[in-house]
Length: 286
Image (cartoon, rainbow, N blue to C red; front, side, top):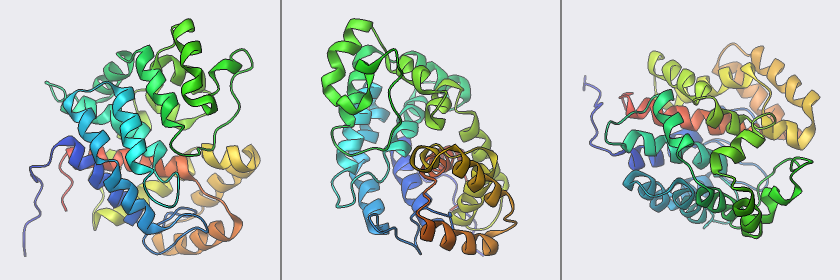
């Protein structure tokens, strides 16, 4: 029997790209594209292409480039496939984690990730907004007291961001109440690190570990994308249905049902992807 290789000699950017590939290869992840299922407008190969396309931006993050610049470059590269938005949310989580992992002290911890978040600038916020010009992203409405900060304005919001002195960390604070990915930014990536520990403690193929971590995350909290597209009641129903699943065999039926119903828990997949990155950095065997 060949022993698993845990020291692959990969840097954080390569591990982030691999996390994107492993996340979409994991199955079943009810309602999401995986190696067995496409959605009507999103296909497996487009996620593979998006992962490879994001590499230049992830490499910028590893090199110490500003978070906003690295994120926009990653999204621009990801967008060069026919499906549109495949991994915007994944990259939003991965870029600061890659920065933390590539820091001089390699502090891939909640504290290290928080330090990256707190160091973001107004220029990073502008880069984040410009990323919305590359793909269409399902988002909720802007805060009532800040319509000029609607992310759907893209780069047109740059003057408002500068006038208000809004950093990328501030943007996430404004969004945290209604967006799970923003809550990861403001909460030390708590769910990401917990799910990474579950992946590391699990056994079997990493793609199965990722699928199980996804199901656990889905049963834990209403999915933001489902709530945005279908309402809070549906998101809570999805959470309850995931909690009733006991293993991956049972999840197959739920996966078919969610695809048929047009339910796509994409935010949960984002966090599962970020957790996969952390697990890779911590030596999960492949």
